[in-house]
Amino acid sequence: MVREAVKFQFSDDFKIAFKRLLKKYRTLKQDLLKVMDEIQESPSEVGVPLFATVRKMRMAISAKGRGKSGGARLILSLYQQEGIVFFLFIYDKNEMENVSDEFIKEILKDMEDAEN
Image 1 (cartoon, rainbow, N blue to C red):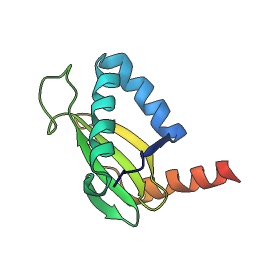
Image 2 (cartoon, rainbow, N blue to C red):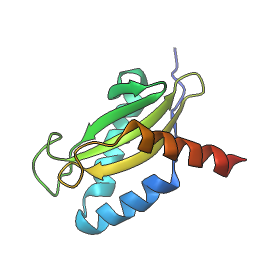
Image 3 (tube, rainbow, N blue to C red):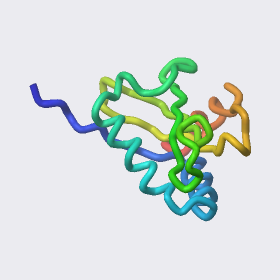
Image 4 (cartoon, one colour):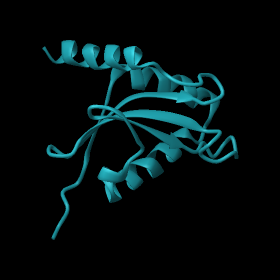
């Protein structure tokens, strides 16, 4: 059985945060590509469920040399039926401990508003 390729989309909030972190960590683009390959391999096993379709995933930042636990956190929305993964937000574990459900819901709302 041939598996359909997962499509990746990025929220504006993700793009802004990614750009800011990329200035600090030059390996971030390659690190994200590795994560995207992982997701492509087994999309249903990605990260830890937060609520509804939203999941949180750890990502190593090679430039930091500290592995996934000291790296970045990705907030994703996974739509398995459609084969789409939305990257909602990224943050450095050193800069932010966690993001609130309200923050994530605001990002989702902004994405819905942008579509309409």
